[in-house]
Length: 161
Image (cartoon, rainbow, N blue to C red; front, side, top):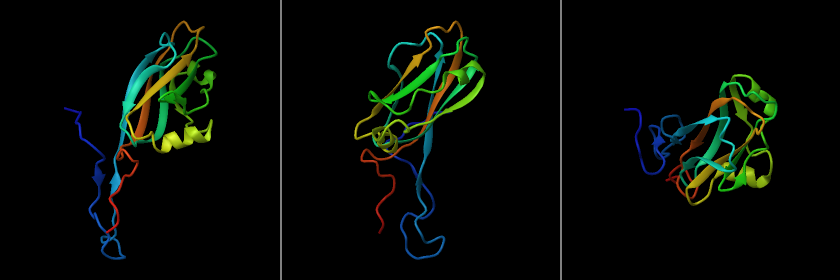
């Protein structure tokens, strides 16, 4: 079995609380990074197609599109949204006409987008995408998002003791 569920962030490390000033006595916990993926076809062009739902408080780290079948068009673009707010500028269309992985630059279109990437908010976030490639006759790939699961308030570590 490759899947498990867990409520809240998983904190990993060997020292929960700082009790000194040397390695092995200083808190070293960190939250886990997880991902979700969705297969996408060139025909998935409806506006705001739901791709993922991620937990409240999550920090989005990366989004990537792995083109497995080159798009037969010169204009495919992708816009990702968190609860309807775009978190990227439309990805360059020409890169989807070749196979391979394209990293989608996040948070570069506005301050609000950067804030959403650092904390999606206090409720679960619906991640949608808009694919604009109305002239495509073929194309497919896998959209993957990676994020850090945090508490609903965006905190990831216990307070210092």
